[in-house]
Length: 250
Image 1 (tube, rainbow, N blue to C red):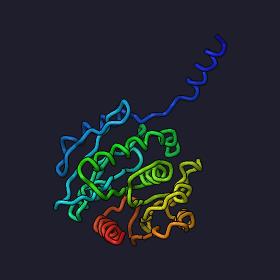
Image 2 (image 1 turned 90 degrees about the vertical axis):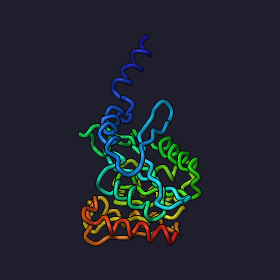
Image 3 (image 1 turned 90 degrees about the horizontal axis):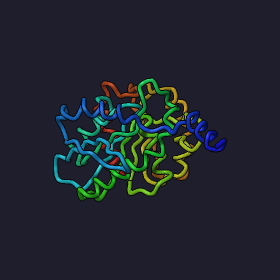
Image 4 (image 1 turned 45 degrees about the horizontal axis):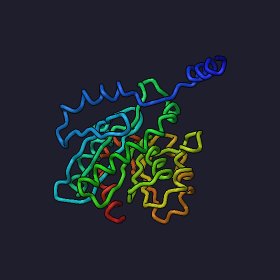
């Protein structure tokens, strides 16, 4: 009886974190009917469906791009996410923007760490979807904590991704198993580490660390966009051009 009581107490004191599915539903209710470019699809993981937006390339193509948003937002966010998922279709990419695990608005960045086990099933479901559409090349374009999540995924799970574009990725995480610099040490596919010269301190101050962590990867490169801040406001054209040019080269 004492053991049972102790275990119950531990469970109360140390709850298992999970994505805020109610918030996911609120986001979906707000954006699904307003999607002008692309179609909403519900992808499945064990016991959960999550929103994705699939937008076909303007011309027939077998290139697929998974778009991963940052902290606490959704797959049709106006900054970085929507410009990438829509405008890259003109450059031959079929894009799939996916809802990542999220927490309530007041959650701190570090509180997302317990959600990282939920990342792999979602990205793998996105890979499966694109492969079912006939894609033969798969890349990830991810922003902010979405880039950290994506690097964590690529470093620790089997995948079919050919390249990663990490936009505004920092490496400030105190937990080593999710720190972007640590993940980059394990990644061998081409990586573009893209950020603005007016980006967040956590991005700018860890740029050298991210670069040094990638010395083994000859296909890793950093690029700084002049005048851009973390959300690339008024710099969408430069953002898309940088992503498109690098992907053509790799």
